[in-house]
Image 1: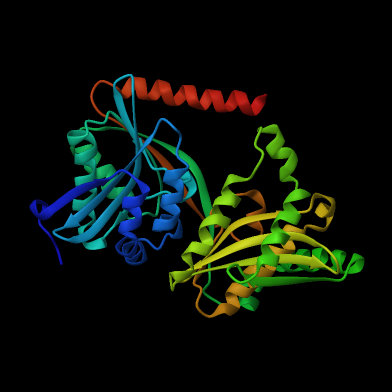
Image 2 (image 1 turned 90 degrees about the horizontal axis):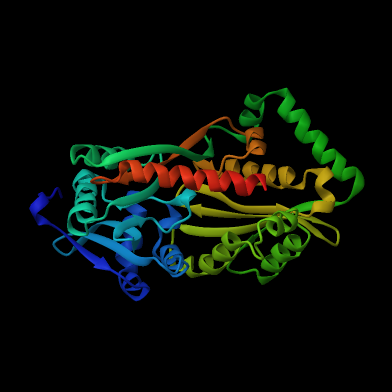
Length: 363
């Protein structure tokens, strides 16, 4: 039912206990409005709990009387008298949650609360460009005179499933088919191997295999260079995914590529409604020459074509090797918002951050 702006209200949740209390309504809204598993209540609670110490939770719950029609999962900080907000999710899966038929009014209510009621000066949001919230957010900020700066972020590659696997492989061309045969033949000539899929909720052994691969992964040296002891994304996925077993549309599988006595690659795959999300993957560095990640992900993608329910595969990232299967990439955009006299300051702060990232990368 459509609502008038006057009937929309906002309440603020500032702790994870309050987020948990509306879990059922929250997840129902995610399922009908955006179908993004990383916006489910359980994931957002984890993101909020893992926030930087100088940020506080700011969950805006937009309601029509007693019905929740929109949620903005945010965190807030005030520094040097300047209030700023951002989405706590990883930037590759962040968005707002808004009922479709009242989306424009919901986004307007969120923008007004942040910049008028809370008197924020800065906001930092990253949204996928195919998000139905993207256009309304830009429009509502423009009409309110809020300064907008947009910058590209890493997109995500998508494989639409519109055919059989045989037809897909044929469309990819002879080079694709020959390369896959060559890679698999190389591994077959050296080892006996198989791919295995296990339900993440029912296979502790599969989780042990993940850590076995991680101990010998190419990521060990990469994390050492970044002074990171653990893969926080992986640990978050492993903590939260079992909590989602009560969600009927959510399923997670752990795929592995196994030799006779050793697991050499793994991949975590979410199924949420009609989309498969390839979330985390890695392989044993000493088997790199056999392209274990390519072999395993090709088997996973093949299975999605046979699933009968899945309509697309979402890689959640845009990495060069993913071009093996698809050229379709949906971009993401970082949206920086500023109100008042801060646009120049905002741009300086952003450029300073980018420069810092470049210097850290070079070092």
